[in-house]
Image (tube, helix red, strand yellow):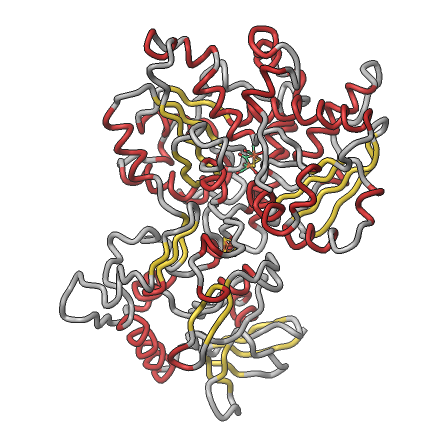
Length: 574
Ligand code: HC1
Ligand code: SF4
């Protein structure tokens, strides 16, 4: 341990900490714009400059390592004046549309201006952003991700999150120097023409509104208000946990009941659970796996419910497409069932004869789910996808006091019942663990296979493996970077019978549409909550879902039947 003095107070800190970490540990807040937990610090924004006794100039707190005996000042008049000037410089180039910006309330620049009472000097023509809506600066070509470089503060975090050490995709980098420095895509192409997989990790780290999910929520509210169709919403497993953070609850708070009540207040006629379709995925994908094992063909099977991963395979390794499960993701299965199953036909004569379809919305922790909903061959299953963040905006915009809602909301049926196995889909390793629970039962119905496969759990990036008796070795790639590393050699071909890949570290819990958080333990807390929900579930294996059994009895026959293939399976672009 070392001893240092911060703003006149003596504090202890661990050797090797940066001034920023030591100050935060001592309860001293230093403003930052280009710092993000887990990503390298580059001291670009200069907001965190501090004075260290004996140093000739102010030093950036995010990259300066503390030394025993350091005497540090973080709030001198000179530092405040410098930060004010720095902020003025940023704001002079920033559009003056904060009231309407999609990240209003979650913008770090806005927060700092408010907290530090920095003066703002926008151009006299109030309301006119200097460069807003300049087509050269905005890019709305991707179905999932919007860019607006007029809002960019050149912090570099998007390039870090997309490149090394983040996703290792390198779609965004930096060009030019000095005043001209700016984030660019490869050859400055629109995102839709790059290798962007729509994972949205760049939107999570962007401190302002320069990178956001393509917003659908305005249109959803309009459609709900018009009441022209029966409306259906489905909620992803990860959303019911992370949405709590948007309304001031601690990370890891489960808000399922409150969330269902909020969706009813927003005007949805049916509130269903994506988890129902996750159980169905296990039936379809598990059967597909066992059939491939028996036929010894196209193994290992790769899971296909993560659209960021599917996008990556199509872009970079089309040779792997035969290995991808043809089972649609739970989102798309649920959409197809909402629109074209007995449920849809029960909604009235116009729905029974196909003249009308329900309006289907999904709430997802994932930006790439917007992309998935627009995929050839699957578009139309789901009409709009809102992220967890967008849903929070919808709830606020309609004046719903989320924290005051009753916790008693329950999903509608028949597309709302689920097991604990479905709930863990939202965590890295969860799809494989859910598959292991059912596959182990199918190969040995009289045995008592483990319910919990702890080797497949954990939020740290990398590869997790285990052996499923009677099935074979399975692997989980936690993050697209882990998958890329695994695929550099051909060892995986003989090592595993099935591989789960989630493009975002932590799985959907860490998805690009989740609430922005600077808490380095947020993924762990969200994951603990997901496994707690599973642990308390009355049924924990997908084949035990009674409504899934009824669906097979009444409509689909059996897993992978012709009816199931038509509704629940897909093809990929080569
Ligand atoms: Fe996911 Fe899935 S788990 S992909 O992470 O298979 O987004 O939460 O909804 O579709 O069920 C996301 C989460 C989600 C699907 C399921
Ligand atoms: Fe990179 Fe993902 Fe952002 Fe696309 S969405 S630019 S792949 S981080």
